[in-house]
Length: 177
Image 1 (cartoon, one colour):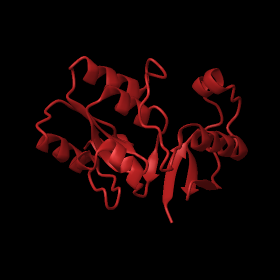
Image 2 (spheres, rainbow, N blue to C red):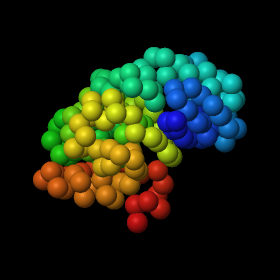
Image 3 (cartoon, rainbow, N blue to C red):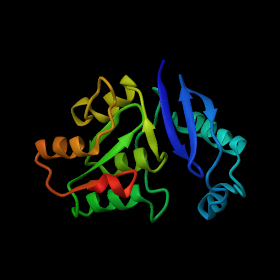
């Protein structure tokens, strides 16, 4: 059984198993002006979170073999947009990011960085999905067998390709030390 655990929409713990939402926790944040502007969401509730995650599964294949991995900028100020722009402008060589179904990956293509990071956030745990790994390129996935999440080892992998200017996403400030 594949299993993916996220913190999404209001830092709500969400579990997706075999392409279906199986558990939605209680949101820790009730409102986000960005989600209000983009989706008209006035308050995060477990049902609103469930509906949004189910929309993502249907819309772009989140946590499924049908995952669409490339896209143009969605916002002008998000982390994935900034990383993608920095790679496009040759300010960075690549980004070490996390993708559901693959874990830690090294991405040097701006539309891949955006497609992975612009649609998801807060991946806590993920399970390998062969189609996602193949679409990224198994060599650029830290551990295709387990979809491990380890940003430090991801930096080492990026360096093994000769990348020197590496952007890295982390989930907490403590991870930077």
